[in-house]
Length: 238
Image 1 (tube, rainbow, N blue to C red):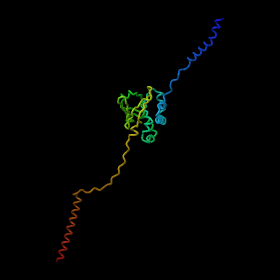
Image 2 (image 1 turned 135 degrees about the vertical axis):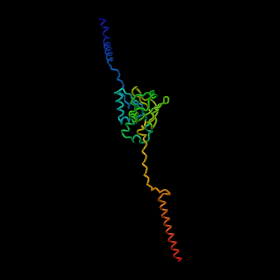
Image 3 (image 1 turned 90 degrees about the vertical axis):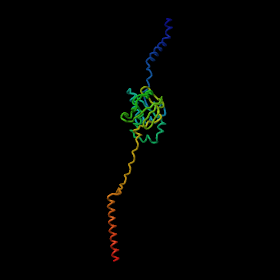
Image 4 (image 1 turned 90 degrees about the horizontal axis):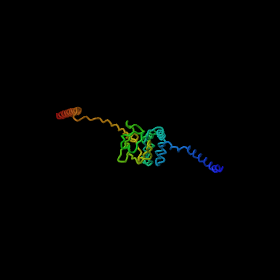
């Protein structure tokens, strides 16, 4: 009887411990981080407001996120800062059509994952989302000097400043210039049409038959006139 009285006070604690252990074991593990979101990555990094606006207005942000979250295909994104866009000639972006803005954004995206070490061995020209560079569409070339990576478009050259984000599928690099496609910004304006020249009648070359006939006619007239004068003078003397 005494043994039951001594044990009974511990029964509620034992039941609480068993319940707590069971409940803790059933608690789900923390959910994995949300799906990849390119604009969220850029917003967290800061100083990419203009690029974020372009990604949203062209709907390229949705396409990037969908591609990353529904396939294993990697992507490389070159991200110009707000200062890079501010350094463009005034009105550059506003002068582009909606389709050209899409191409401008796509020109900053490679359809595969390239780490910094990959730039040392990659073959030029690089293919971008804007077009097939093998067909001469939107060519992009990479040059390296030590650890420095330069991106050349044919219009300007940008340097990779640092890596903003990488997860093995998506890598985002900060660049110090907006990549301007040759297809959009490198076409020289057509020259103004030249004024038609007035037709100037060609002069007959010296010593031509026309000149000879004119000189002969003048000589004949002079001879006749001299003869008339001579006859008149003789008649007056008679």
